[in-house]
Length: 428
Image (cartoon, rainbow, N blue to C red; front, side, top):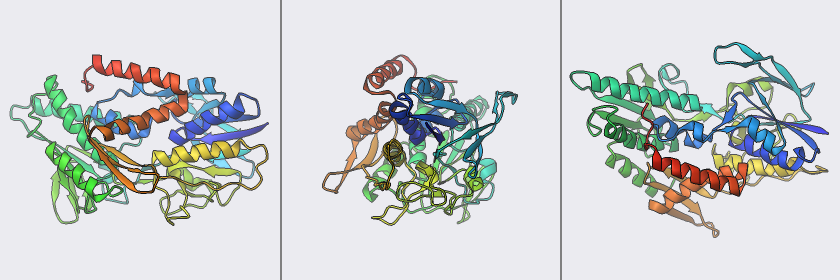
């Protein structure tokens, strides 16, 4: 019986482990092992809602151990420290408690085939002071840290005899930056309505979105970029395009044109790269540390190792460019590898083909914009309530892949009821 080890429990890694567990693990045809440093999974595209306080991550997390027990795979909690390719062993560090004490020792997990699904982390591009003074949204803990600082800044400002404005600077006009800016505009109003602070949301809280390019959301149609910018400005967000950040300080952000933006909280959402563990694997990498893979998602240095999602570099043979770091790519690659690894006789491996179904970006609780790829190949622009419904269905599709229709429907109903009986934003 072969052993398939999946390193990383993000959107792609967990969907792959679940599918392989159902097809190979339960039947005893293979031993499936998922390794992740966290005990629970959270869908990364929703981190901006945790940062704004709109969503409680506890209600949407999936315990890896429970998922493993239900779907026929094993879960190992620990951080990957390296791979011994000669011995075909994945090296996992010790599992530690919150106080740093060791709960489980370091382990060595042998594999027949290994899938790297590490995801991505923030890329500061060497900007001075960014790593020291800017927050990120790589993990749930990062989002919680931002939310707590946001609430604390509002309360501290409103407790002073003379109100001083709370300045928030978001660097990066991609989907994460735009979605967070829109959610913060609504969050500050809800916190004022519940009297968590006494600031004027329109004048005492300033959210600035700084983008190096000439428009927001460069991956979308320019018409949608302009619509998103207009909507953010209507919410009171200051949109600064064509502004390259030169350095980040504890209380300010400076751009290359000499402008200084005061900042109580700075968040960096301007780009991603593969985590540093990729450097220690001895595999071929691109300039942002992504593992270079063949059309079958095998690493070019070791046919026993595959890579998917944000940590891999797969060049589309049609467009000649690497696929973007998106959950849609990770999902399709996970489904492809689930079929490939389940083959009785591998033979010549098929090639992965990505189909772009479009992109959707949230603009707060009541708006969204995006584009869909029609069957004819034509781009269809969507907005308003339709875009909002489609945006919410993206997460439900992820839950459907992990739990099936019945459980997804029950969870959807439970979350809808919870939204009706609880405040629309977390108050502490």
